[in-house]
Length: 233
Image: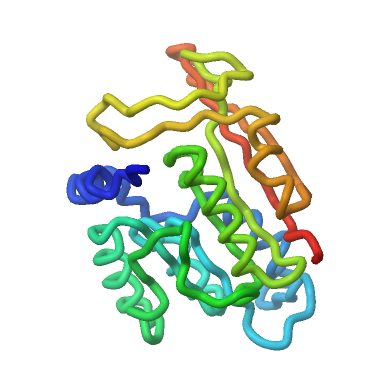
């Protein structure tokens, strides 16, 4: 199945997805589940680890979360389909002194990632699994579970049909026709579709639907935000 690599390279060449500030839900996940600030200059890991936590950004784009995790003191890694995105992500990673950046930020298919079983303590993915065909999302989800350690945690999000143009339970797919991300896939999710995606490999710790409404225009859109824990074998 076409993974839309050409379209994503074009999108990044146009700088459609040049996002620099970490997403607020990724920051929230980090502070609640990885490291918590307990004083002005004091931090405490939420659960004991033998060394630095290592975190993978699945579909890292230009690397905003890879660099964020590095500045938090973690061993951070990223993978993305787009060669154009990875060029920028590696440059950014070099600027913030991520070691061996070409081995940590890589171009590749999230259905077949190059790391061994149970490599990572945590994984995050923002705006990725709803921008690919569902069968690819299922393969990539299973692959993310493979590279996570037992009971490893995974933050991800999905666009909901609960918006100005669809209905809450809409779960179809559309080809993007607007100039932004033109030609890529927009996959909509509802609760049943989320369950189908996660149930074999993860337990759901959090599932929140956040709606943003423009009061002036009346338009709105919504996203599901999840925190998942890899099931024990």
